[in-house]
Length: 213
Image (cartoon, rainbow, N blue to C red; front, side, top):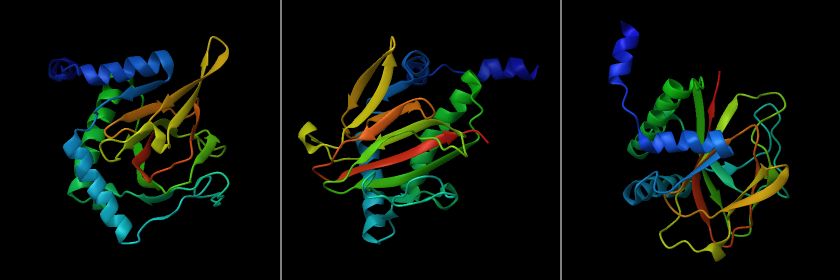
């Protein structure tokens, strides 16, 4: 009986279905306007307020057991987000992410039980060299999620593009994604190597991972 009620309550979401289809066929999904321009502005304001409070720190390489800071590999500064202490902007963000997670778990049985997100700022002339988002001692990250918060009118010459290194028919192919505001990129953390190209203008985002226990 419980399964019957679950089936009745389920409503197919075309956007989420497209994300699922994309990941199944090409290991990543690029979603335009996952967040509205108004939502992006709210998130960007929250990010900048915290940045002005000097709450950000230099990003590190590796997980908490093996953290090192290597300027030759990455140059962003970050601030981890705590959903239990979320401000209104962060609550809005997590509500939309949780809706996606719940849908993925219900339709794909991914077993996403945890998530971690942080604000990220790439100052001018910084970058993040080619890497993969899982660690040798921790493979819980399943999907990587990047949400771009740049100002409207972001130009390709501003740099900071994300490059995904894909395998198509045995050959490596580069997928270049510009950090236009409102865009969300979701890709398989354990499979896709990627990098952030040098930034010519300050680049803003929320980045995170959907994880199994």
